[in-house]
Length: 325
Ligand SMILES: Cc1cc2nc3c(=O)[nH]c(=O)nc-3n(C[C@H](O)[C@H](O)[C@H](O)COP(=O)(O)O)c2cc1C
Image 1 (cartoon, rainbow, N blue to C red):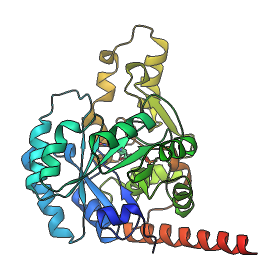
Image 2: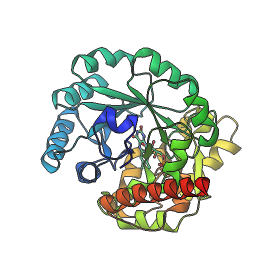
Image 3: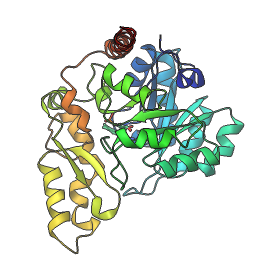
Image 4: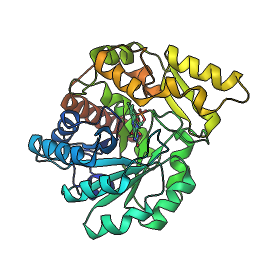
């Protein structure tokens, strides 16, 4: 058993988190992660309305008695989003752990604290981590340059980002981006984190509600098969490298006056969603991290979580024995 500040804070068995994932973070996956003893987050904005989110929370509660949370990501979106109403649905659904991302969650903290909700904020830089602690977040998730989704604009990988952040934070820090096995978990603990957050690795599990073609694409892909896009608009995202990713990258880097309008038709979320539903991996953009290079199978969440913890424990024991010798 690896007991850390993270397992204590959130009341979960293992120091492993499944971060919010647009179109993927649904009840089937989150309940499987929770039942495996890790901490899963439903993704609020995957539900079309706050009312639909309330139903999804209830559905997940019916599938597990273990703790789970909800991710609310506040980012520039193509259509305006009723964030306050989503947050109300989270609180009224009895959720006690919230993962925020995108913007400073400060405006929501009074409501969340009043309702006994613990807040973990996803950051991509030391300064944002420090700010999160200052405004009253309970923990941070530190997303390095390797991560799927939005790595920020600083391009600092976790080997430096995590210890740099650990030196300045007193609240628990979860390491995020590039983690997929027990080796990563031990490394994260060594670098000052108290657990790991994984997106891509959990997307490639049996219970993940995406088409099998997507999972097979992740198994096949190497660590070089991701593409950074939207850099020109200071909203960088790391996605799986397919023909659409390459087309967006080409427009951004070769058209000096390119605006978001030039790529809007390629970037539409509905196209990304259709990848997961139809299994046409070229149909739109879809997030994936460099960690896909070390993903070689499609286990259940329970198999994955116990494998990671066992491998981490073995490594720790082996290192102790080596040092003793
Ligand atoms: C398909 C997918 C969708 C994601 N969507 C979100 C999201 O909506 N909000 C968010 O905060 N993070 C999102 N992320 C990022 C993950 O929560 C996590 O921080 C990231 O995947 C960690 O990097 P890794 O993929 O190397 O494990 C997404 C990741 C993936 C793979």
